[in-house]
Length: 124
Image 1: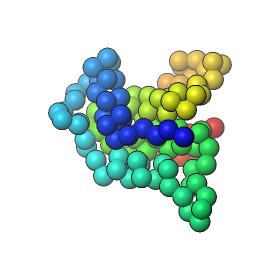
Image 2: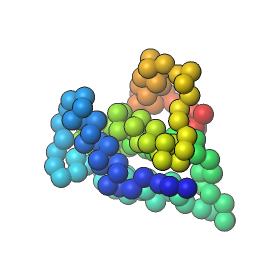
Image 3: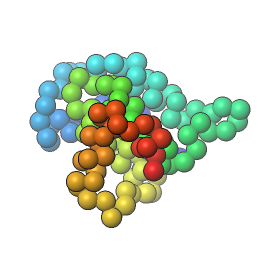
Image 4: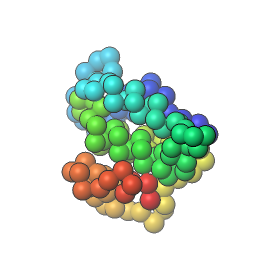
């Protein structure tokens, strides 16, 4: 299984801000860098020999939820969380369902950001 690095996620943040607007504060745009460090550690963690987040969906959800809910960056957290989840799936040979519309994806991302979806809700 392939994982996103800290640098990959910063690059995603910078890309989304460059593409869609917002503020990027060089060099990394961090608001809470420690939350990103925690995410990088926990996404591949094991407990008692078992993966804490065993499926691709649970790991993609973890990337999305933690970046959005924990405000890793000073701007662009929703876009970065969504793109990080999608990028993680893609580097592991998967894509999000073609049945999802842009509105579905937008509304779900807003639901996560507003606190109306738990981590478990991002893993389906």
